[in-house]
Amino acid sequence: MTPEQAKDGLIHEQPQGYSMTPQWVIKAAPKHVWLYDWLRARYGGLDETFPGVDTLAEEFGVSRSTIERTLRELRKVGALEVRPRYKDNGAQTTNLYVTKFYPPAASA
Image 1 (cartoon, rainbow, N blue to C red):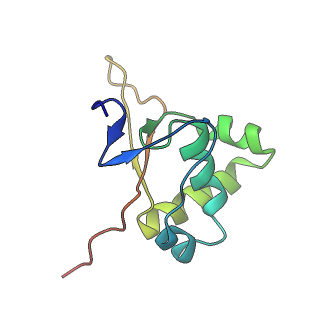
Image 2: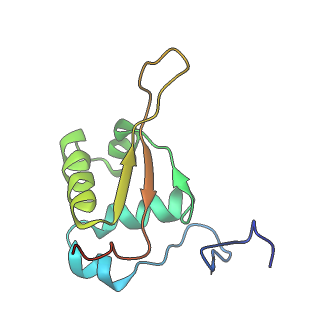
């Protein structure tokens, strides 16, 4: 296994287009798992993903507000991290979405 094949001890095997959803995500956000799965399966799974909200809304045939609400819920439970990205001139471009496989650490 090469470093490119594994990340955090996980292998994303063929065929492409499938994802593994941890039980903690299903339990924490059962109504929002569809977007988590889509981000992992369609946009790289174990890697960071780059789709815009409009792209996601178009792919699902839902409104921007549905995507935004679902992203907020996935962030709230710790299943998704959203990082703003910026162009060289300082203008913001699309966000970077990182799906989390492991549950967030418990707060002390």
